Length: 195
Image (cartoon, rainbow, N blue to C red; front, side):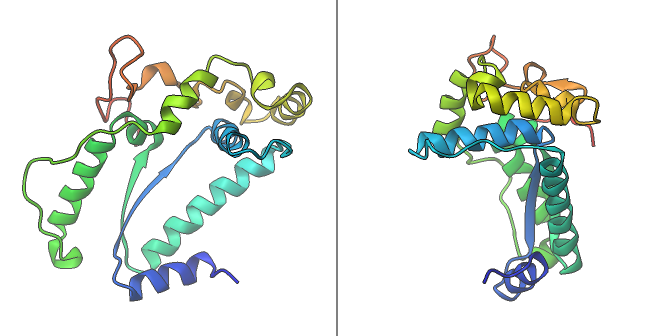
């Protein structure tokens, strides 16, 4: 079978890896809807959308377990906000390169100054823009949308029902658009950083 997260990082360390770039999409519902659309886009039309508070808790726990295991195994860990990764991947790469160069004795990485990163917008980011104007019901089905709303209403996760929300206090319109198609606010980087 597959190794557990602790064993995974032990194996990665033995294989010579030492740095982890991590990002957690706080709006787990939006992440799951996006993943569901990818699955359906690949022809799996018989897959039903399922989501509940346990999905949020499981995703959050898995992320935290991964960070804990990475650090426990001596990895250098750099966390990014989801909006940073989607807003300016090149800026994130540059930050990671700087961190690794500052820790050269540990990472063995020596970086030239300056960036040779080319911003590329993935096909998924381009195609998912078409779905963003649709309601949850249009994206996952009426029945499933009602079940999700029922599960989240009155909980600390209710804000996720707004698929445009990237956190309880931040909307997608507050962060850079990597495609440059939303009023000229193209991938700038660390705006809105709330670490």
